[in-house]
Image (cartoon, rainbow over all chains, first blue to last red):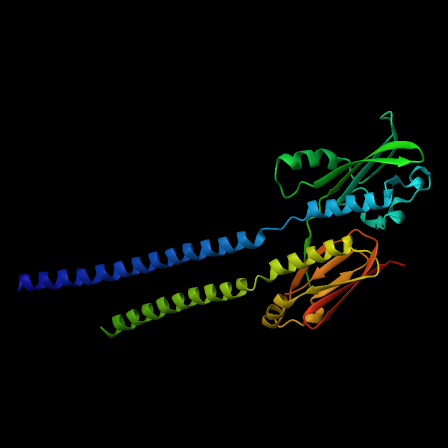
Length: 178
Length: 129
C-alpha cells in the first residue's frame, strides 16, 4: 500500500516536472523568436538607412556651371572685374539657395601673371574649406564633398589663373504628408 | 481532471496564437520592406535634382519609370501624384508612400515641370521668369 502511494506520488511529480519543462521550453522558444525577429528588423533598418551620397556629383556640376560662365572659348569673361558683376544671374544659379547656412559653397580666385590675387568671389560658409579637407581623408555622412579646378585663361593680352572650389553638403530629407 | 485538461488546452491555444502573431508580424514586415519604396524615392529625387542642375533651359528629358509602376499599384498610389516640384524651395519631391516621401533640392535657376506620360516622366526645364 505504502509502495503504491509512493509510486503514485512519483508519477504526479514526473507529470508536473514535464509541465514545468514545457513552459520553460515555450518561454525559451519565444525568446529565440524575439531575437531572430529583432535581428531581421535590425538588418532591414540598416539596409534601408544607407543613403546614396551624390554631393560630389553636385559639386562637380556646380564647378562646371561656374567655369561655363566665367570662361568663354578660353577667355575670361570680361564682366568679372566689373563691380556690378552678378555671378548668379550670369551662371543661372538661384541666389536664394546660396549664402550663409546654405548647403552650397564656392570660392573663385583669380590671380594675375605675377600670382597676385586680383579678384575673389566667395559665397557660403567658410567652414566648408576646412571640412572639405577633413572629408577627403575621413568618409563621413556630414562632411561636404568638394571639387577644385584650376584654369589658365586670357583676357585681352593678359594671362590669368583661375582657381575654383565648389562644395556641397546636402543631406536630403524625408517628407511627411499630413 | 477536467480543469487540468482545460488549462492545458488554453496553454496550447495561447502558444499557437503567439506563434501565429509573431510569424504574421514578420510576414507583414517582410512584405512592406520588400517594395524598397524608400530607396526608389531617394534615388529618383536625387537623380531628378542632379538632372535639373545639369540641364539647360528649353530641355526636355524623358526618364523611364517602369520600375515604379508595380510599387505604385502595390501602395495604391496614383502615378501622377508621385513626382512634384516646389519651386519656392527648389525641391524635387518623390512620394511613393501614402504617408510621405523624399525631397532633394537643386540650385540652378531653372523652372521645372514634371509630367508622367505612360511609362515615362517628362522633365521640362525652362528659364525662371
